[in-house]
Length: 393
Image (cartoon, rainbow, N blue to C red; front, side):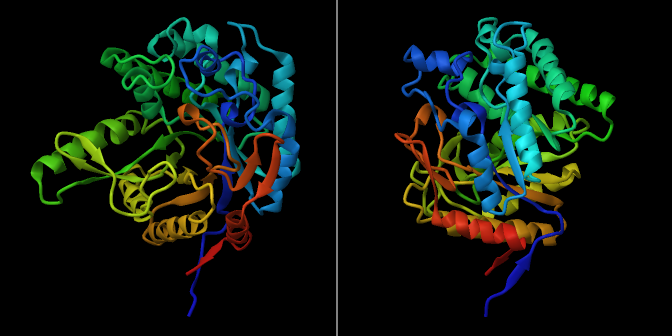
């Protein structure tokens, strides 16, 4: 017999995107330049043309019964040159926010989602101490413009992952492999997050500010191996807890981006588990979100699942992916973890950074030739979940 699992009252149900991945033609940031110069294999181009079609896309959000939307604002549009704020683009985002307000959709706004204005990238970007002044100035400008139209503020998306990919693995702009620059970038991220948190709270004491933290479920490859356990402890500390510990008194909530599990074999080799995988080879491990949520309990902050999704072009796995992750989220809530919302990644197929357009993460399919939107079957399942704030198992 089927069992209905009901989520808490006022739970947020939504989806997420980021500006560079969906808007198209973000010509003033470091990613665009890397794409044009061949440092990144793929070009974002028009992306999903969300910049022009946002009203249509918000109608889809409403049609799919979602009551919340997470997206990022493109810094390089608002400040294309140092200290020069583009009023036309400020008004564009005001229209975007008003369009969401008119549809009664709660807004979670991300201030930095992997892209940095080119003028700032030339000064060293996140590895330069100047970033603290420039990013906090941008944040305060945006807050002044939109504070009454935004419900939640995310300062930085996946800070440690972004710093690692940019300054350690060298796969993202500026494509450096330098541990000193890596630590500088993380130090700057912590400093500027704290500064923005304090500045926004000074203006509006009840503002809600946090980060979106990517957390992988790490497990020892050999469960009884002391060395594998030590490797898991060290990786988890540096990648997950270090940043959150540093900002624990400067966050009103925790944003959790959860995708997968990695088994760690000493010394620090990450190996996929044996469960089913997505189109890009990530293991699907729903129980991992339960384990991760329990590790976040100690911070005693409300938690929002700010990203959770999979690359699944055929839409064969997405329905069960959503249902199974929500089951484990529900279990965590019942055991006392304060989870208040779920944002599926992504609302629509998009430009998946260094992997281009091939991975299909969207609830909504995009035909990149015509820009036509098509709702996937799994999206209708999620729409039912959103409507009744419940899952059936």
